[in-house]
Image (tube, rainbow, N blue to C red):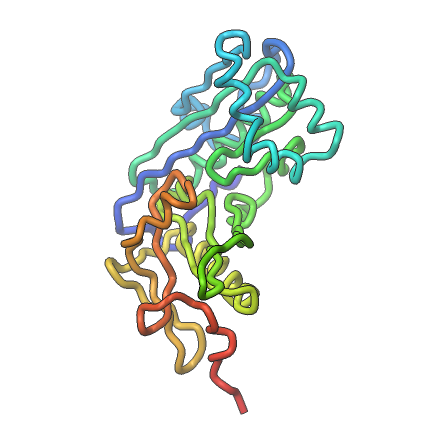
Length: 267
């Protein structure tokens, strides 16, 4: 199994946190292979995770919060009808929780998904990536290369009460790499451009790129630079990211409403 590596070894402190929830009906059954058969680089790395099974009967309200409210809307988006029925019928959740200070590679993330596959093989049916807020009933094969797009989500919040038509476009899931989520405020007309920049930036950061504090320049095109700055207005809390955030702004420090119309004209 090829261990996932950083493209560039980070020099800034990182504290990665991973939380996966595997839902199923009844207790897990025993099988012979250990998590290394499902993609964990080593059994020792898999054992760094806290894995515990919790029956719904112990706390029905807590249990149902994992598949109700806004998470219910996400489940209905992510799951086929039969998979959604399996989530509704679940009476056990198996939590996979780990925290890693200054990891030197991304094998810890491989180990988390290996544990999820291991628990599915033992009777789990639906997996929730809590930080990315994404459900799945089928997990990627263990031998696939790292795909940051599978590990995070980029969400464009279409509701806005702001007079400048600014909507939040943001990531979820960067906490798994020990880094802040990225947020930009832009309009519908800007979203295609901004999502491309955010996706490329998130992938680079997830793979080890450091981000200068408190202001980090991002070259977009000749003559156009945007900046990642501190979240001075508490946008992360408003979006309930469960993580800190860096905000993408233009070269004057303003939000990105109208940036698509300001692209340099290439002759």
